[in-house]
Amino acid sequence: MTTQLGEVWILGATGRIGRAVASRLVADGIAPVLVGRNEERLRAAAADLGADVRVIVAEGVDRTAAEIARRRPAVVVNTIGQYATTAGPVARACLPGGHYLDLANDLTAVRGLLALHDEAAAAGSTLVTGAGFGVLATEAVVAKLCEGRPTPDRVRADALASVSTDDGVVGEPLAASLVDVLTTGGRHYRDGRLVAARLGAEPRELALPDGETVKSATVPSGELFAAQQASGAPQVSVGSAMAPTSPVARALLPLAGRLLSVPMVRRFAVRRLAAARTKAAPRPRRHSWGHAVVTWPDGTTREGWLRAGDGMDYTAAVAAEAAARLARGEGKPGAHTPAAALGPELATAAGGTFLL
Ligand SMILES: NC(=O)c1ccc[n+]([C@@H]2O[C@H](COP(=O)([O-])OP(=O)(O)OC[C@H]3O[C@@H](n4cnc5c(N)ncnc54)[C@H](OP(=O)(O)O)[C@@H]3O)[C@@H](O)[C@H]2O)c1
Image 1 (cartoon, rainbow, N blue to C red):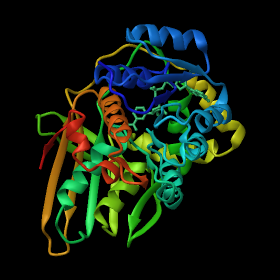
Image 2 (image 1 turned 120 degrees about the vertical axis):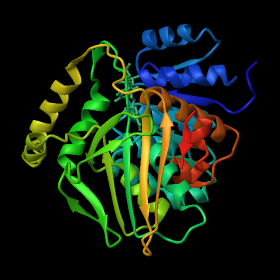
Image 3 (image 1 turned 180 degrees about the vertical axis):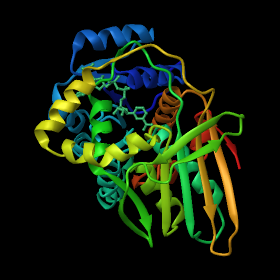
């Protein structure tokens, strides 16, 4: 039986995450509306769901935003990527009263959406950015470790996703976000300020609670911003298992970043990378992990983990759970990262387990 809530629209409903979110919502009794730019692919995605769902064809971000403003869905889930440019117009179209979430995890896009906080709060809308493994897996651990304690001095968090791949191509949203990480260069917080750092700095090998090991090095990400907001710590670094950790690759990163800042080179690189073929492969490690070590001025240190399964499946679970909660009006008005909007327990409601 479907629940009588306002409509939940999924933008990018033909994509890997869009299809998975739609299927989870249907299983939860919420019939989503599938939105995309190709009617045939949308109808195929709708048929796969085996439920009575509507489709809306809208070409381009501006047309999609106009449809949202006209038809006023209760919640919009944005999975079309390129969030630094798509999130603003789509999120604004949800105001007043409608809610929005996306899966951004780059620093520019996350900060851009959070800049709409006052507008969203005044309009009674909740905007959530980073509603996936990234940002939530690390943000939730930092929030849990800091709960009810004074402001710490230092946080190191690591996003250690383990993801299976399908036969196909990398795709433009992922290609663009990988290239953007290289052009942004490294970042960390020092003395409370976001400052430039070397990309791939502070490499480390982590022993995971399940006995496996993984290497991680720092990258700029939405998780960095969220970890600072959740802790208030003046010194914050965030690493990722996706960052290159070999000395040769790390030495070449600054040069690659400078080259890719040239717009023509960037467009070429995104096109080539987007078309690169991926092979079906199982995930490299049993679990995905969010990890954080928090240190207080008196030397006290706490370490915590969030264990999840495949990073992509977990991302879809987080987005679907957040969308259902927003549809029920459970979000705080304003623009937030996921744990800030819906509480760190969103991470366990989506199937994760804390080890604190
Ligand atoms: N935060 C996290 O932890 C996390 C984890 C996983 C993924 N993500 C992000 O989530 C996004 C979706 O990932 P995915 O694996 O589902 O990607 P995907 O399989 O490539 O799907 C992308 C979807 O967006 C649509 N799309 C792409 N560009 C568009 C545009 N300009 N206008 C309208 N629709 C457009 C595609 O439609 P067509 O079928 O018409 O091409 C497709 O439906 C990516 O940005 C990815 O980086 C975040």
